[in-house]
Length: 262
Image (cartoon, rainbow, N blue to C red; front, side, top):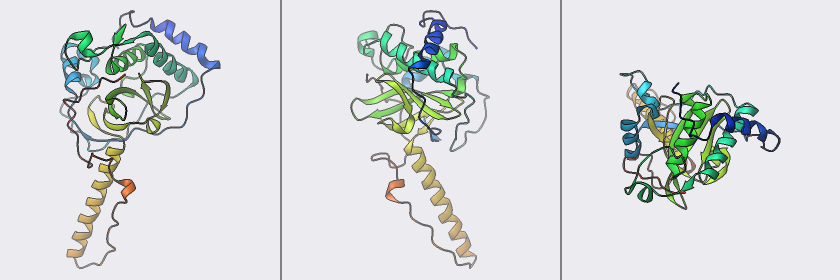
């Protein structure tokens, strides 16, 4: 594990601060693993970050040449003990209160630059800073995922997802309260799997999984029918099980999506 610079707010002090929150931090609400589907391209800003700072990219340490599965259910290794929950809350609150929000245009003079925030940055920079602090505190690399969502207020937005044995939780620059991923008022677009690869995420991934299962069942029925065996027709997926509006259950092109909301 890389040793990170002490400028990231003094991780030991943050950890102790997190423990001190035990009396005032509520217990986590139950969650579930973040649904992940077909692979997508990584956002351009993240690709550029990997080129300049390879240590920021967990997938650079994944074995090469492995075929990626179509759908993934993350198997988290981090238990959500009271100390870990307090640490998540402390890091989330620390970054949200200490970092000043500025756009990439203001900070770098160009759009879509991903860089861990120290004193200023936008949404993906907040998320990267939180991930870096949690890595330094010993959080498993594969249990922290960058994600891109669509906010009904600000549009494209980046958050950090903490994957635990109790499900996935969202650390958000727009909210000092950590919540289960399904309770965040976002349309999920893409997120990293435990190896750091980007995949269709959230309800879109669930819809695509349902569509694949439905197609496979139809194909199976056709093969059985050709063999002269009568079967019950496959049920059509209900409207509630379809992909979010506008997604069509398709793999989104996220390369040029530019998160930047508060």
